[in-house]
Amino acid sequence: MLKNENDVLLSFLPNVADINQGLGDAGIETFRDSPYASLARECAQNSTDARLKNPVTVSFDMLEIAATQLPSLDSFRSSISCCLQKAKDTNTEKEVEFFANAKKSLDRENIKILRISDSNTKGLEGPCRDKTPFHSLLKGSGVSIKDDATSGGSFGIGKNAAFAISDIQTVFYSTQYRDGETGDLKFLCQGKSVLVSHTDKNNIPNLATGYWGQKPYMPVTRLEDVPEWLRRSEIGTSVFCIACRESPSWEAGLAASLIQNFFCAIYRNETIFSVNNGGTVINKDTLISLFGNPIIKQAAADNGHEEDFEFARALCECLMSLETKEEIVVIPELGKVAIRILVREGLPKRVSIIRNGMYITDNLENFGEKFRRFPLYKDFVTLVEPIDHDGITFFKNLENPRHDGFSSERIPDTDKRNSAARVMKQLAKAIRDAIKSQSLESPKDSVTINELSEFFADQVDPEKLQDPNAIDENPEILKYKPSKKQPPKSPSQGNEKGGDEGGSGTNDGKGGDTGGSGSGSGGGTGGAGNNFGGKTIALRNVRNLIGEGQSRKRQLILTPEETATATVAVFAAGVNSPERLRITGTDAGEVASGSVKVNFTKDKKLEFTIEFSDEYDGPIEVIAKSFAEREAA
Picture (spheres, rainbow, N blue to C red):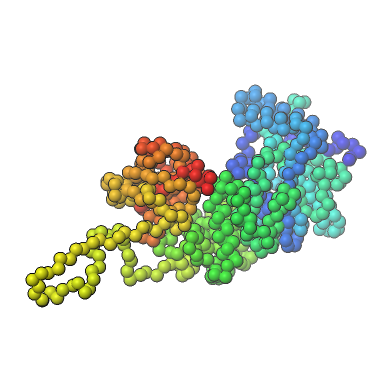
């Protein structure tokens, strides 16, 4: 250790302007809802950006150290106590709860730490001064310091994901790298805390941000001056989330996020992931089996990403399958763009855009194209990826801070902004055209409509038809029978047999067999298959109402024939086959994986409102399944 340990300490920036900073840091709050999944995506992206050679290896491991092994433990405890006192003085309930829990975390005998470390990377190059990657990560805000303009991130808002899973919002960083001038191996280590503005034990006002390291606010530069758990033995970077908020399914949740977002880089052997000291290894050889791992699939579902995880699996098949059709289009300013399309029954009819091996989004809604409705199209998935350097850079410049969407509004110059919008609209049209060429079903000369069969006669044996000019004293009486109805096809989203009961109605006012009629509503019985398991719950008198100018909302009215906790899904009924409509909001129950979980009481009419992810004012089918049966399935 240092000869004078007082040279290494925790120091907060002085609050000379009396600024009041609360706990709700916007950058950290962005990742609060799904911290582990967000951390996996952001850290993996930054490691791949610092690639030295393939494959980059990124490990996520849970450590447990004695509390006494945390540098400057007493200073951390003191700062947390001061923040807690401020929260109590100002009667800020959320902050009182947070800092009380933080104090408990530091008072325990042992502390949990999540370590994210990489290899085959260049490390975080220093020294800690302006315009270096290390400085950008620790002290930069709104700046981009990356070697390559096509890199996935810029140490922007994504670096805050690590703070979201720390119960004391504190992260340590250690790195080894080669000095660009001398070629010598260099080491840097520094900690950072983001708390609230507070007055310390010496009655000195401090800002919310503090740094652990050598005075003044600088990193430790000697490997032997830090505890063993903070050291590195090779070039690369390690990130340590202190007092980690451990979740029982953290390993599976991380794995699900990594697979879902980086399947392309994994399949191409550009990146390998290891979780929980090698408990789960994600590489090209294990990728397919992990897509089918029930524990990982459940973790994705628990985080609300069940459909997206299955979508990623379909996209991976699109990469590997010999049935995939590839079209290379050339668009000004983007250059070459690869559009890969796999047509196969049961696929979700979705588009994905990939950059640098990472999944970005499934739409271009800011350019007028959501890629949601594909009537009369065969089932498919589409993978879109820029090939040229200019195209990759172009995409990056349009990405939002979370790297999950594109918008030309991010460009300040008006002419360039308008030009970017035109380019992306050209891309959207090219994608549509490519899908149309591979997936649009050709029109048929005739279509069997079973619903009208009862109004027309069945075919009659030609031998029994009499000559109309003949005279027959005993003409045969012909009896016409309606043809038997064929059961309706199940929705394209699943392969299960449809239920005997269920509801559907259309917004043209035409009800079903037992429902009423009227403007904006419909009723009926009947059901369809779906992509979630469990016992079908029969529904009666199903109606749906659309408010004027509210095509994303429906009021559902239905009567269940049994008491149960149910999962309700809605499908768009069309000429082809019903398509699942993703539900994003409701005034009853809760939304999970695009459906609604509600409580049914037998023979008791239930009314509630749902909201779709996209505008839709066409006819719908309503399906209900027993939630308990679904979980057991």
